[in-house]
Length: 167
Image (cartoon, rainbow, N blue to C red):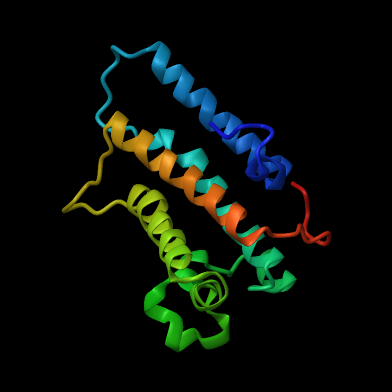
């Protein structure tokens, strides 16, 4: 799914590469068992959604959008700093604001929309509206996550922060 020689693959940490590999194995397993019907294929997206969260934290650190302390914090929330609705309230703490100013609103919106669709809507459970993904919807979300990460790396050309852990 993510070509090993690509700029994105080179940028990913060891742990992020493992998540991509795990996700690929789940997809391949599903292809080997096409006749098994499941009511929800969200599980296929999970490794890629987790990868995306780690990718965004690393990207924000490497672009000096967040500090090392924020990167390491258990309280740092990607969805909060990436939300376009919180730019004014967060000011300089808004990753959306930084990305928008430095690389354009299109990239900032893409990062946000991928976060919202590929993570938030997949992970949350609402009793009145159980969001279930078909196989093709799950594959589309995975593609969206990979394309977004690829575009972000291609556009921003981040340099790895040597202080950040590889795993």
